[in-house]
Length: 130
Picture 1 (cartoon, rainbow, N blue to C red):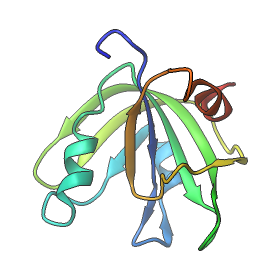
Picture 2 (picture 1 turned 120 degrees about the horizontal axis):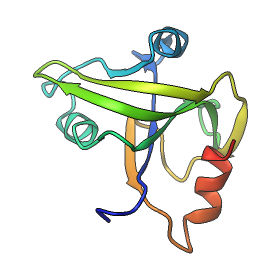
Picture 3 (picture 1 turned 45 degrees about the vertical axis):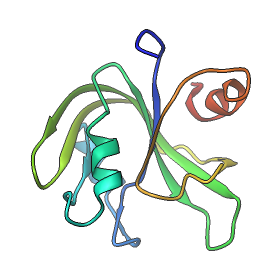
Picture 4 (picture 1 turned 90 degrees about the horizontal axis):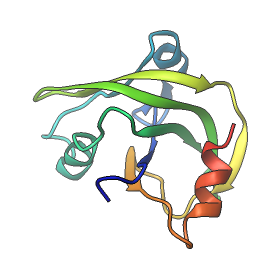
């Protein structure tokens, strides 16, 4: 997996309702805005994001929906982490998108890394193609 392109689906709604994606795009960042004390699994996953990875901000389509909306896609340029948050510098290359794709269970804040396989390639293309 080290030489393969890696892909991440991330959220940008704090407390489920406070949407941060426009601020993130404007400032060329993505932030996991809470630390290890709140959700160790999500925090540890976010710490695995690295420069060159592809990232997509997604939003849930509503309770019970099997779909998510892809809002923005970008390329990670750098990552800063501390005990409270993970901050990625991002070159947002596709913004204000409205792509509905199958969630495949990606409802939490951080999902990935995904790599291209015969099983994932079509789904990754739906999300990340320009």
